[in-house]
Length: 462
Image (cartoon, rainbow, N blue to C red):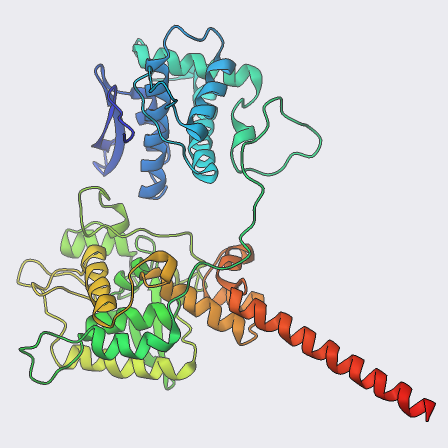
């Protein structure tokens, strides 16, 4: 049975905190007593975090509340409750007799369970400090609800026992101390990369997979989907980054095609007078797509902590590899706009995004994924992450291509716009095929060396 959270649910509420009237739409936790006030304050303090981070934090705290509700009266000490809670995340709550708790939790992967515990640790960190300083607050909290009382109880133990959950989530290692309850994370390291899109099928995907409907007698490909695929496969972009492009973000400078991916909020807007969030709001009445509600708005686009290489524009450039692919992209980009495949928005629905649907609205994550999956099936491939045939497989192909051709790790880091060089490791680990070929090459060199040594000994004997 799936995870069922009955004592609380997630809603999105608008926060207005001062005379500016600026609204922030944020996820909150709602119980039978209303909005969980403490967590709502915590969420507002973290309003600049990504929507994925916010919703993951909501889910983690809801799991904690659900566990507390199911086990009310069983634990007198917070440490014992939290040890049991962490065990339940890793092992699930179902046994051979069923699940008397009614939670019906399935076991979670160690890294995911650790992330959930990390969210709870961060929240209780904040809650412990907030409770400590409650007498200094200008706007003190009202009487706590039952759920808030339990969280305050947890925060008190947290403050007293010094981060009772921190040993269970990914943080900087502590070499001078050891925890009573050790981490349940499995000792493993990825030795092979996630599957990359097979290079030998890229041309077929572009020419046949994205072919437009049969009624198009010219048999042309859908340039919109081809351009997005080229940006991922030869430019290393994530799908969300490609879809975030505005029409003004591609230019030709000194004979080179330049594609700039701007931060969706702080990136410099056309004209250079304001950032993109203000530009969207003032000119079009739109929000940045990373600030939309992920669960309900199909136009939502996530934003990773990418390496910004142009501090003035708040953007990074796409580095096409091989170089010729950039020229192909530039030619198709011109055709996309000149042939009218980009459908212009209707009056009153204007926006600056480069890729549009048939109604002229911004192209969505879901629509491209559907088109890509149909194209994969059309050329006879199996759709799946393990096959490298999802959209993200193209980014893996880009990293693998750079590593295979001998690019320096620092160059790969910058080309893939990672803030840390370790983030590139998953994209550049040798494939099993390359491992076998490399080991065979070592054997061949050794055999040749031994043969030369034997020949030398025979000549000396003669």
